Length: 429
Image (cartoon, rainbow, N blue to C red; front, side, top):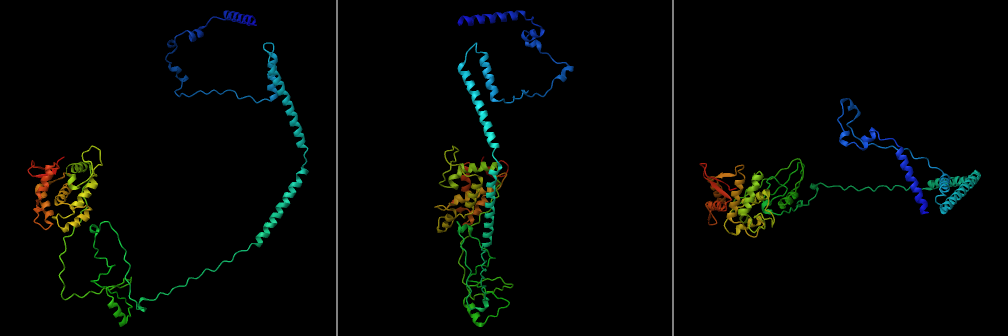
């Protein structure tokens, strides 16, 4: 068997050699494709050849032939059987041949079964299906008749008459002898009663015991008994919406008692006039780094810039804190300082140095964009703030007001510029 294969291989090699020897010699095209260098084959195009090329590149798609129609299984089986018989002398394949013959037999049996079933289906008459359709039609008619009877027997519920609500007759207030009751008061809760207290002189919704209010109506036909009742209950009054309201002016007492001396009111903090910008942010950072412990004792902010703790507040929050401190009145340690301690929510009242320092810094921030004030103006501001406590304005709590300024200079927060002919106090940035 091996010798036979070697003989066939030798014959094929000799045939290929003879065929290649008889082939024609290589032509110019063959030499250009196989033997010429690539650089010699490339050249610039002429002007007449530009029309052969286009600048738009696109993928070339190959449209192959459409798939052939799927043939019957008998054709494939017969083709396989013919190839097996054709190359049977080269290699015998008995199992493949028996398999193909089995497939052909199965195809014939399947074809025969399909023909039998088709014939039996055609023999089915329509008379067998028609009785079923008639029965279904009769059933549908019966169901429709039953549904119509049920609709006729359906009882529509009667609508119940809507209950009439009795109208209560409201008697006029003049027909009764009851004493009018005071209107209910609404409690308003706030977190800071001392700071938010405001007096509205135009609000007459709540009557005062010192000024009783009596209301007269145009159609008032009160009897002497009613007048006596109203006069006895003068502290309690009711306001009603009428066309004309007359208030009775109370009589001036013959000997008015002297009013007690009122304590100095807490100064309402002014709205900030500081325009926040990058310069103000720098100033605020310098304030927390130098006098942060003074304006907010015991704070936990990281003023060193190491990033270990919380960052100090920004300019907006810092200015609001300075406003709250500057709105207080510097007073020495006394029971009256409890008002300041309550308004600032701290365990101890702010010291005069804290209040004056906040007052100075706030005025310097409001003097932008130069953020400077004359030294004489600063002294006047501090003296005026200190004089509100009842003192002379020079000494508050045993300390001079100018000491606040020089304490800020010592901490290098502000400086006194004497170079321009006028002494100016400005931030030391």
